[in-house]
Length: 276
Image (cartoon, rainbow, N blue to C red; front, side):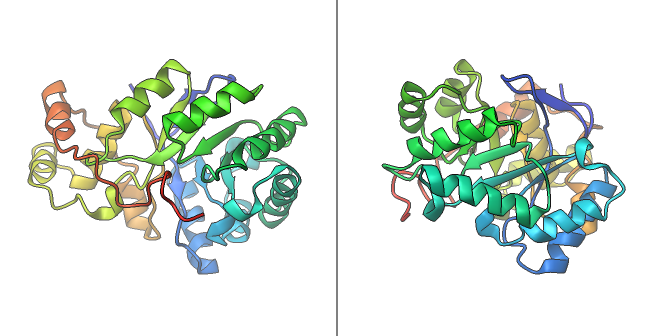
């Protein structure tokens, strides 16, 4: 059971990754991203998730530098964007991300989307970065089971993480089960369903029962499902609220009530039909 903001999951390569991190998608304003990172670290977060396409790696790097926590005590994730995929271009994209972040290494580097005909070459580049010690772990994002099966059949290293859209309306049960068998941790982007679930009666009722918000109930549900979460917020009070998850527990019956909200409904693109 996850008991604190610093609690970690041990990935299959032995690296420890915090269960809770800050996502910085859509934070394009330099000061907004920088201040959100500083606020999160001050509140006890130790994991920050960015990506080249978010155009805020520089701000994230500054936020980390201006925090009071040493870089080696933090877990920083970034991702290679679709237009940079391929072997040589991925190596260059990684170098550019490190430069923008002003860091010597990354804790986790992900393939952002499974671009057909490219992601296997991209993965070979990721394996080289991992072998060279420039990144401590490598993983993927938005991969369906068939993408993972194809990747695993052609690779030397297995992804440590698959970061996908998952929330009570899209519980990804089959994918989660497959990833568990393969020792690939599941990480939720948009764990709150882009805020579209916060009006659900069952979530509000459970929140009232535990003296928590609907958002906190959803995030607790993720943690009890052994899912890594990176809720995004630019507001200091919300950043703190999203981390206030460790003084209550959902019963099995309450977990089932939330599970029943599943509709296999996506609020983001489907990896099989995404326009790369």
